Length: 82
Image (cartoon, rainbow, N blue to C red; front, side, top):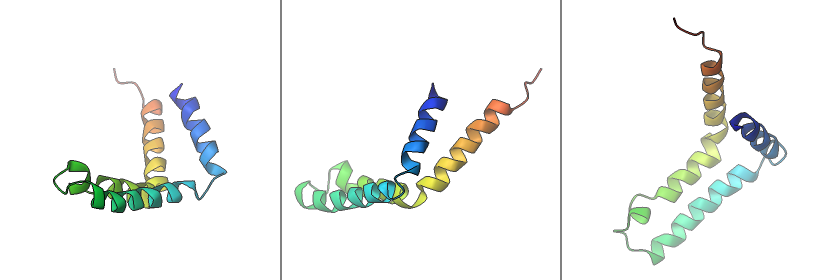
């Protein structure tokens, strides 16, 4: 089930190469706008969560997702101990 979901998500994003960077830029802009409307004491604006998430999605997502997929595939093919 998870394998099919990952395949579908991967194929969906393969045809939309600029989608993840646009989502990341959008999250950074939302973070900037929220700085004006939410108190700096609130955890969302105090930690700049959306900005960090946007940067991770926009810049590092492809490398991170490939690493996670490779790790999961390695776990599936690991020899059984015993």
